[in-house]
Length: 353
Image 1 (cartoon, rainbow, N blue to C red):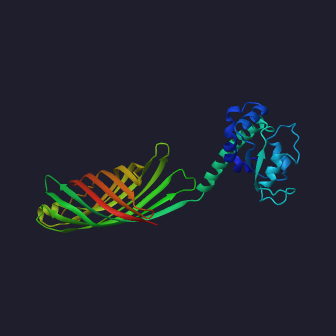
Image 2 (cartoon, rainbow, N blue to C red):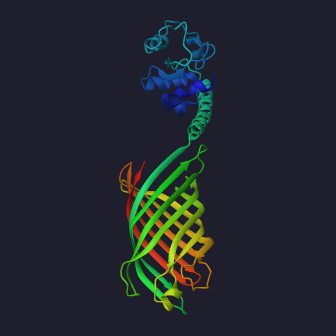
């Protein structure tokens, strides 16, 4: 029964706001206030529930000793103001109606109790609606393209040093976001591949084709709505290539070692606006937890792997509901058979499905 009163909640609060200053006063005080405000009625929107009658509805708001006949102005006003009700002898459960109350009949204690009850039920209803909506998992897909420029440095003091500008004209990726049924967290995942090109280097060779780099990640993200930011953490995987410095030193040839590293990542994100344009910033730190290396030079006996850290900063700006632009800064610091430092800055755009 209480639940069906909720639709009149907001309207009731507006109707009663005029009388807030006399909520503890008698009905005669309310009548005086109504007269001073030149108000004839208090208008209340209610919902009919099972076996309801107009008399029962009026009793929710008027004094117990009130004698209200059909000729009362508030009854006549109520009947005329509800054209949707065709049969007043058989009110339909769930239909809405407007009740007009004469202030001289209103029981302020009933009004106060009604308002308190409706507020309590309103809170429960809103919680139920929120939970009901959250029971539907939301899935979002997006794809992106990015081009980047960067600097690659690899050095082993006893062998050689390689430095070159590491550019990528093509990075393609796919992102997937899942908002689970309870709505308390988000699952984020993405996968990409990059075609790399060594534009200039200290090896005297131009435009060195570097094998494709592949990456994948999956994060658990928890929102802090009051602080308007999110914390996330999870796993990163990268497959990339480094030069085999033994082959550079011994044979002056360019052989690549294939590396695979798994990172543990912790980061945060924050949405904000500049004027009316929405932005999303993400920053993260990753530490290697697993690594492997496949040696590409047969005479190299060093089978050690790379370990280290990765830093990332990402900025996204929505162009409209489907397209966005993004920028990326990524920096690796790795140690192993050699010391490797890689910095890359990229720009691109994406499409939301």
